Image (cartoon, rainbow, N blue to C red; front, side):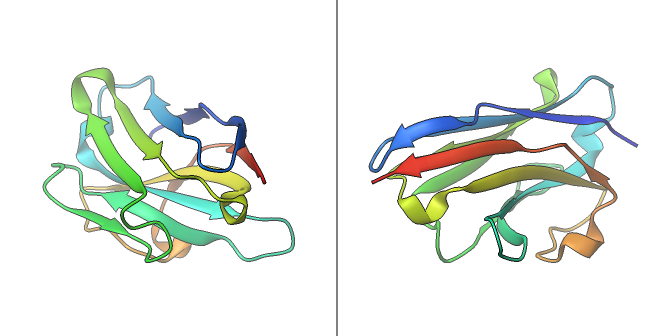
Length: 124
């Protein structure tokens, strides 16, 4: 399994940008399809974006299409989530999740490894 550590969260004004990172210290992260989920206070955790282990496929929730971009640098064992045109509705804890040599799934139950999360707050 991998040990995921998220970073890059913070407070930003509406319309601003943040880039989240999800890093693993091991050497097998390139074999894991990886997704970002988010959970706002009082709401269910929801899928945001995912990228296959090969980086050939990416998927996005409708709510972030055109604003967020997921990418990976396997040489750095890191997956990124570039978030542009942020809205107050994007305020949530953002979590990185990984699944070994797999397709991308929208269900959190499909993922075997999780990070501790990073908080994103978008002010209006």
